[in-house]
Image 1 (cartoon, helix red, strand yellow):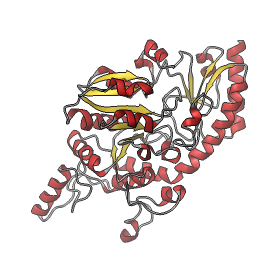
Image 2 (tube, rainbow, N blue to C red; image 1 turned 120 degrees about the vertical axis):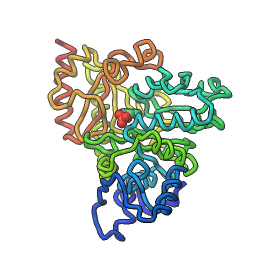
Image 3 (cartoon, helix red, strand yellow; image 1 turned 135 degrees about the vertical axis):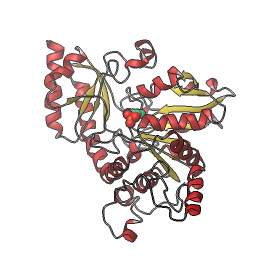
Image 4 (cartoon, rainbow, N blue to C red; image 1 turned 180 degrees about the horizontal axis):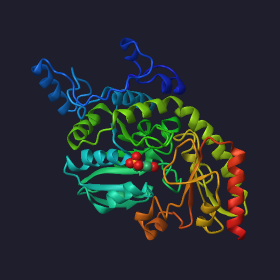
Length: 394
Ligand SMILES: *Cc1c(COP(=O)(O)O)cnc(C)c1O
């Protein structure tokens, strides 16, 4: 765990990763776009290069942008502070981050078997299902993890709240079952504002920074928060596979963290209101939102500090008519932006998982997924209400 800076969540979100700015005499973090760095003492430069290649967190010179970038490193320190881990390692995208964890936990250890709790983000599910990285995967329900472990299991993967069903998974219970096998928790939906999986035993905490961390729909990135001994191999892999986050992305993700608690809290308030109203709507069959399902209370409060701003529902009418009739809500994949987004998982984000596998893990074919943004809640309601009425009654 990190030495940690003092203060509450909002204070840490604003001040994290800014420790060197006073010495630099600047207020906003500088965006360092250098691809190479002068090394007049080539021996010293060589030693730094060797240290980066060994997975070091710091060295005398960045030497070359694929080895290290100071702007990205500030974002990493800030995110590690919020997750309560020693370290964080940023990547070009959430999927690059998933790939690096699978490589570190499975491929470099000779344990190519993965146990994955469904449902998962469609890209992660498809990466593991295709075996493109040379892994094999057993897909299980949360209480089947122990039974699925093999001597060559290198990683357990889960997501909570899960994408797109909003199912909650008890992280500590899965960690218990996993024993010595490291557990990767995708914390994209909850964000560090609502959940810190490392405190419940997760070895790797992953975010698609593209979503809430950036928060404005204008930056692609990923990050893994973990202990120092797990961060080193991830940095080594990042250097050699080149899956680096661009410094401008690092800057935007770092800036996004400052407002992350306020954005998540505000969107969560609207989502809670809308989930309640949707549950009463005649054009809606079933609402998925943390706290609504039996058993959620075991996780909500203890592990997940709030229900969040993602929800899903089954419309009574054709889901594509609902989407087509919306005016304010943007029909688009992705989530966690300032504006409210809606998408049909079976058609888009989870298309590659396939209907039978989706049904088996409790994702109905008509389910629509909503990412609630920062608009006035009454405007969102008016839009949803009219679209649901048209879809239900033609
Ligand atoms: C989007 C997403 C990813 C993948 O992230 P990219 O930045 O798009 O590569 C992984 N997990 C979850 C839960 C996501 O929503």
